Image (cartoon, rainbow, N blue to C red; front, side):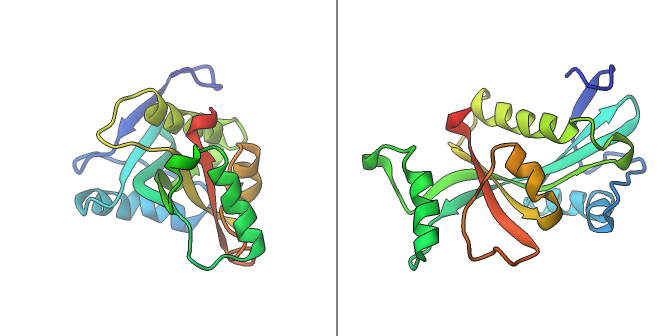
Length: 181
């Protein structure tokens, strides 16, 4: 994987015996997840974490788990419009209350590498993983529960809001349709 840094970035799947070096993205919750919880999530089969390394430095990480886009029974007019945007891309005969997705549970870039397009590289990598590689199950969407501070980043990367119910929350549910890539 060619890096904007001029060196090769390596994508490594975190394993229970992986040795982790220091990492600081500026968010203690995201730092703590990688250093103290990611292996527990792997062992509990709740999420798989991938590390992006440049030589020996951890540049970034993200974790994945399966998810679904699910339409709630009671929708406001705004939520109906948002859900209709999801459904318009799917043939009428295939429309359902939920659709298969993969969730980016955490995505963090070390502060030393911030602003270099690493987040975009990660989103592209996840999309390639689910569009180009064969899997045991289908996956139509990438979902995130985006921190309020990251909303602009996900908007720039073509993620859409799933609901208006979380508009005032610390996190917003967003999705990217892999079929449109």
